[in-house]
Image (cartoon, rainbow, N blue to C red; front, side):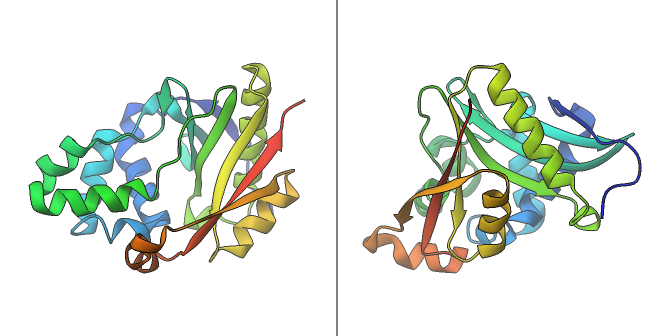
Length: 202
């Protein structure tokens, strides 16, 4: 099923949609964020402070936000938070543990590579081609800006997402397992490993 009406894809989240985007981000990864934030309200507020509008690809139908994708590359991160941000929010003792958990969601920059942090579609629009529109826009953006490849990570507990990305030209490259000392942190967040997938840009 496709969307009703045209879908516009472009870079740059309008500031007036920041809260809605933060809500979508939190709810799409609720199991992970619930292990870091004390509650949904706090999590959304925290994400609002640290989302990069310029690192966000958006899908709109008129004035309706259909979905977003977070991009990361040298000089631009969709979502950035520091140890001091977390200790300021939670205090030193709790902030250290939350910083370790947050690090589980991070991935380093690779020169010449576009990292796709996440693709999120409004629940009412899932299965209607919005994710495909976003991936097409991301591929076009990567080609136009001379990136050699697009990289993403899919957790081992989400085989549907892996199949979706495979259908759009991504190939499994390697498995990143949660380090043994930190498995007790990964399991409550809903995964024990992540599959790194790559799409080459010609």
